[in-house]
Image 1: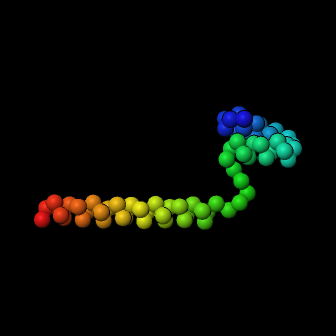
Image 2: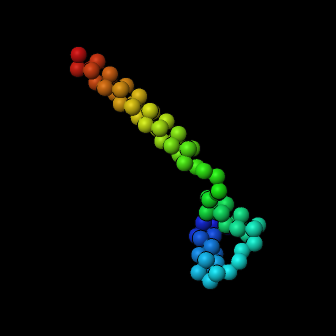
Image 3: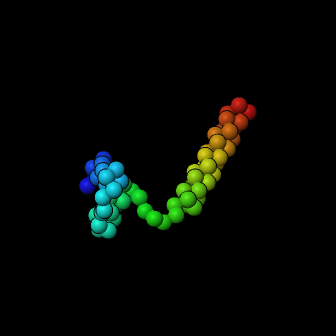
Length: 70
């Protein structure tokens, strides 16, 4: 099931107050890349790591620039 189809099915169920079986809901959530686990800490860790990588890259470029100027 693709994302747009899953979104459409879920939106239709919400709009018409219809029930969804648990297996179908699991499939919809999987297709929509949703889960019930807290992803905030994972996202924060990922973003902090990306910032660290960027800082390292900036320092490396600054060092190379200083060496080329000197």
